[in-house]
Amino acid sequence: MKWNLLPVCCVSLLFFAVPAFSQNCCPQPRPITVTGTSEINIAPDDVILNLGMVSRDKDLATAKAPHDTRVKKIIADARNAGVEAKDIQTNALRMTADYSEEKVPRFLGYEVTQSVELTLKDISKYENLTSKLLEDGVNRIDSVEFEVAETRKYKDEARFKAIRAAREKATAMAAELGQSIGKPWTILEKAANANYYLANANTSFGYNSARASEESTVAPGEVTIRASVNVSFELQ
Image 1 (cartoon, helix red, strand yellow):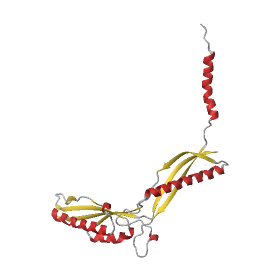
Image 2 (cartoon, one colour):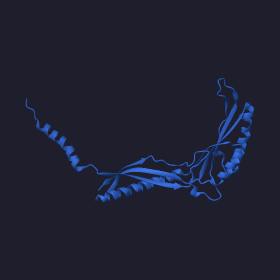
Image 3 (tube, one colour):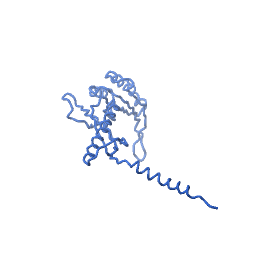
Image 4 (cartoon, one colour):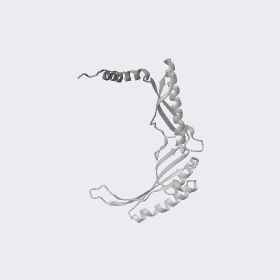
């Protein structure tokens, strides 16, 4: 029996010729990859106060009694300062029994704690409100956080500036090599740190004192929002 091998050989040659033809017609792109970064500094417009009240007594009812009065005063003074009801959050009372560290522990009394979180949207009232809250019975300031309300808008702005910086960098680098850039191939946003909160302590704060006024002892400084992107462009 005779086999006709000519068609099989033709098909095999065609199969191996297609990849070579494709490689010649579709050369691999020559990319240039750069990183663009940007920073935007904005004055904060909100301040979040985390406040605490602590009382101690050997009688639980006596230790717990002042808290209701204190919370009512705090809420009233916060509302008078312009804090909306939705920006005031109170947490439940926490009651713990305190004992000495002797070999045979002695009962020392009860400790009752409660915390309140306020968001003040007029920073100019911060000092007066804080002083009033201390008079109301707040004996612990757990944190003070200055922030920017419309962070999304500034994040977008920082991102657009980072992309623009990436294009300018790629254009300059390519020109130095006698090339130009074409269309972008990939765009990747990198995680960037953003300092939305400038203060988070109850004794000292990281403010920029150069921005303080003569009348005020509080200088909230600026919030820095950063963006970083990796972009690959085609070299031409």
